[in-house]
Length: 180
Image 1: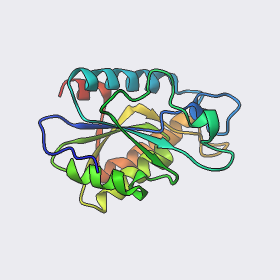
Image 2: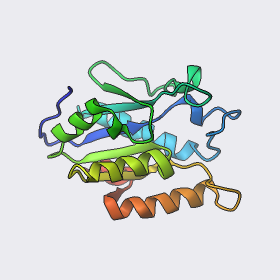
Image 3: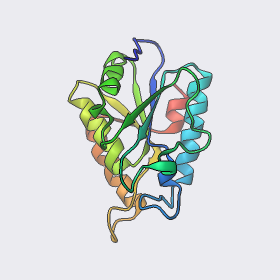
Image 4: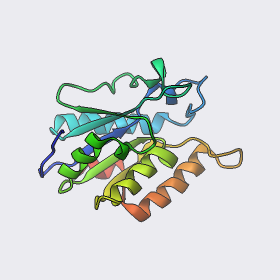
Protein backbone atom coordinates (compact mmCIF):
# COMPACT_ATOMS: atom_id res chain seq x y z
CA UNK A 1 0.00 0.00 0.00
CA UNK A 2 1.12 3.53 -0.74
CA UNK A 3 0.52 5.93 2.11
CA UNK A 4 0.15 9.67 1.96
CA UNK A 5 -0.22 10.63 5.59
CA UNK A 6 -1.50 14.09 6.39
CA UNK A 7 0.72 16.79 4.94
CA UNK A 8 0.20 20.40 4.09
CA UNK A 9 0.07 19.36 0.44
CA UNK A 10 -2.92 18.14 -1.52
CA UNK A 11 -2.78 14.81 -3.35
CA UNK A 12 -3.12 15.12 -7.14
CA UNK A 13 -4.92 12.25 -8.87
CA UNK A 14 -4.60 12.24 -12.65
CA UNK A 15 -7.26 9.97 -14.16
CA UNK A 16 -6.81 8.24 -17.50
CA UNK A 17 -4.54 10.72 -19.25
CA UNK A 18 -4.06 8.21 -22.03
CA UNK A 19 -3.65 7.87 -25.78
CA UNK A 20 -7.24 6.61 -26.13
CA UNK A 21 -8.49 10.20 -25.76
CA UNK A 22 -6.16 11.91 -28.25
CA UNK A 23 -6.26 9.37 -31.09
CA UNK A 24 -8.77 10.55 -33.73
CA UNK A 25 -9.63 7.01 -34.85
CA UNK A 26 -10.67 5.89 -31.34
CA UNK A 27 -14.20 5.74 -29.86
CA UNK A 28 -13.29 7.98 -26.88
CA UNK A 29 -11.40 10.59 -28.92
CA UNK A 30 -11.99 14.06 -27.48
CA UNK A 31 -11.99 16.87 -30.02
CA UNK A 32 -11.94 19.56 -27.33
CA UNK A 33 -9.23 18.02 -25.12
CA UNK A 34 -6.43 20.57 -25.72
CA UNK A 35 -7.30 23.26 -23.11
CA UNK A 36 -7.89 20.71 -20.36
CA UNK A 37 -4.77 18.77 -21.30
CA UNK A 38 -2.73 21.97 -21.06
CA UNK A 39 -4.20 22.59 -17.60
CA UNK A 40 -3.34 19.02 -16.56
CA UNK A 41 0.22 19.66 -17.70
CA UNK A 42 0.33 22.85 -15.59
CA UNK A 43 -1.06 21.00 -12.55
CA UNK A 44 1.42 18.15 -12.90
CA UNK A 45 4.40 20.51 -13.18
CA UNK A 46 3.17 22.51 -10.19
CA UNK A 47 2.62 19.38 -8.10
CA UNK A 48 6.08 18.06 -8.96
CA UNK A 49 7.74 21.39 -8.21
CA UNK A 50 6.01 21.53 -4.82
CA UNK A 51 6.54 17.85 -3.90
CA UNK A 52 2.85 16.98 -3.74
CA UNK A 53 1.86 13.33 -3.71
CA UNK A 54 0.81 12.34 -7.26
CA UNK A 55 -1.23 9.31 -8.29
CA UNK A 56 -1.52 8.37 -11.98
CA UNK A 57 -4.54 6.18 -12.69
CA UNK A 58 -4.36 4.12 -15.87
CA UNK A 59 -7.43 2.50 -17.39
CA UNK A 60 -6.42 -0.87 -18.87
CA UNK A 61 -8.80 -3.42 -20.31
CA UNK A 62 -8.90 -6.52 -22.43
CA UNK A 63 -10.78 -5.79 -25.60
CA UNK A 64 -11.06 -2.93 -28.03
CA UNK A 65 -10.81 0.03 -25.61
CA UNK A 66 -7.90 1.20 -23.44
CA UNK A 67 -5.64 -1.58 -24.66
CA UNK A 68 -2.29 -1.78 -26.40
CA UNK A 69 -0.77 1.57 -27.33
CA UNK A 70 -4.05 3.35 -26.51
CA UNK A 71 -3.63 2.48 -22.83
CA UNK A 72 -0.28 4.32 -22.74
CA UNK A 73 -0.03 7.66 -21.00
CA UNK A 74 0.00 10.75 -23.20
CA UNK A 75 3.52 12.08 -23.77
CA UNK A 76 4.73 14.25 -20.87
CA UNK A 77 2.35 12.48 -18.46
CA UNK A 78 4.49 9.44 -17.78
CA UNK A 79 5.03 9.02 -14.03
CA UNK A 80 8.32 10.13 -12.50
CA UNK A 81 10.06 8.06 -9.85
CA UNK A 82 8.13 8.03 -6.59
CA UNK A 83 4.79 8.80 -8.22
CA UNK A 84 2.17 6.12 -7.83
CA UNK A 85 0.68 4.31 -10.83
CA UNK A 86 -2.54 2.44 -10.23
CA UNK A 87 -4.34 0.44 -12.90
CA UNK A 88 -8.07 0.00 -13.12
CA UNK A 89 -10.36 -1.94 -15.42
CA UNK A 90 -13.62 -0.37 -14.23
CA UNK A 91 -14.69 3.28 -14.39
CA UNK A 92 -13.96 3.94 -10.70
CA UNK A 93 -10.42 3.44 -9.44
CA UNK A 94 -11.94 2.61 -6.05
CA UNK A 95 -12.38 -0.92 -7.44
CA UNK A 96 -8.60 -1.19 -7.00
CA UNK A 97 -7.82 -1.89 -3.33
CA UNK A 98 -4.44 -0.11 -3.54
CA UNK A 99 -6.13 3.07 -4.78
CA UNK A 100 -8.75 2.91 -2.04
CA UNK A 101 -6.16 2.43 0.70
CA UNK A 102 -3.95 5.18 -0.74
CA UNK A 103 -6.84 7.65 -0.78
CA UNK A 104 -7.89 6.67 2.74
CA UNK A 105 -4.35 7.37 3.91
CA UNK A 106 -4.59 10.83 2.30
CA UNK A 107 -8.02 11.70 3.71
CA UNK A 108 -6.65 14.57 5.80
CA UNK A 109 -5.24 16.13 2.62
CA UNK A 110 -7.28 17.69 -0.13
CA UNK A 111 -7.64 15.13 -2.93
CA UNK A 112 -7.64 16.80 -6.35
CA UNK A 113 -9.16 14.92 -9.28
CA UNK A 114 -8.33 15.85 -12.89
CA UNK A 115 -8.52 13.90 -16.13
CA UNK A 116 -10.88 12.03 -18.43
CA UNK A 117 -13.75 11.45 -18.87
CA UNK A 118 -15.70 13.62 -16.53
CA UNK A 119 -19.06 11.92 -17.25
CA UNK A 120 -17.75 8.49 -16.30
CA UNK A 121 -14.41 8.02 -14.55
CA UNK A 122 -14.11 11.39 -12.81
CA UNK A 123 -17.74 11.35 -11.71
CA UNK A 124 -17.59 7.77 -10.44
CA UNK A 125 -14.33 8.48 -8.58
CA UNK A 126 -15.77 11.44 -6.68
CA UNK A 127 -19.04 9.62 -5.89
CA UNK A 128 -17.26 6.37 -4.91
CA UNK A 129 -14.87 8.27 -2.65
CA UNK A 130 -17.83 9.73 -0.81
CA UNK A 131 -18.88 6.21 0.17
CA UNK A 132 -15.59 6.01 2.12
CA UNK A 133 -16.05 9.39 3.77
CA UNK A 134 -13.71 11.20 1.38
CA UNK A 135 -14.45 14.55 -0.22
CA UNK A 136 -12.63 15.20 -3.44
CA UNK A 137 -12.08 18.43 -5.33
CA UNK A 138 -12.67 18.19 -9.07
CA UNK A 139 -10.48 20.45 -11.20
CA UNK A 140 -13.07 21.00 -13.91
CA UNK A 141 -10.91 22.95 -16.37
CA UNK A 142 -8.28 20.17 -16.26
CA UNK A 143 -10.88 17.56 -17.27
CA UNK A 144 -13.15 16.88 -20.24
CA UNK A 145 -15.89 14.51 -21.43
CA UNK A 146 -17.06 12.62 -24.47
CA UNK A 147 -20.30 13.71 -26.08
CA UNK A 148 -23.02 11.62 -24.49
CA UNK A 149 -25.13 11.48 -27.64
CA UNK A 150 -25.87 13.36 -30.87
CA UNK A 151 -27.67 16.16 -29.03
CA UNK A 152 -25.21 16.64 -26.16
CA UNK A 153 -21.78 17.96 -27.14
CA UNK A 154 -18.51 17.33 -25.30
CA UNK A 155 -18.86 20.74 -23.62
CA UNK A 156 -22.48 20.07 -22.59
CA UNK A 157 -21.55 16.62 -21.27
CA UNK A 158 -18.70 18.10 -19.25
CA UNK A 159 -20.91 20.86 -17.78
CA UNK A 160 -23.53 18.26 -16.87
CA UNK A 161 -20.94 16.02 -15.16
CA UNK A 162 -19.37 18.98 -13.35
CA UNK A 163 -22.76 19.98 -11.93
CA UNK A 164 -23.31 16.45 -10.57
CA UNK A 165 -19.77 16.22 -9.22
CA UNK A 166 -20.35 19.53 -7.43
CA UNK A 167 -23.05 17.86 -5.33
CA UNK A 168 -20.48 15.31 -4.11
CA UNK A 169 -17.31 17.41 -3.82
CA UNK A 170 -15.73 20.79 -4.42
CA UNK A 171 -15.28 22.26 -7.87
CA UNK A 172 -11.96 24.02 -8.46
CA UNK A 173 -10.13 25.65 -11.33
CA UNK A 174 -6.49 25.22 -12.23
CA UNK A 175 -5.84 28.83 -11.16
CA UNK A 176 -7.36 28.17 -7.73
CA UNK A 177 -5.19 25.07 -7.28
CA UNK A 178 -2.05 27.00 -8.24
CA UNK A 179 -2.91 29.60 -5.60
CA UNK A 180 -3.08 26.97 -2.82
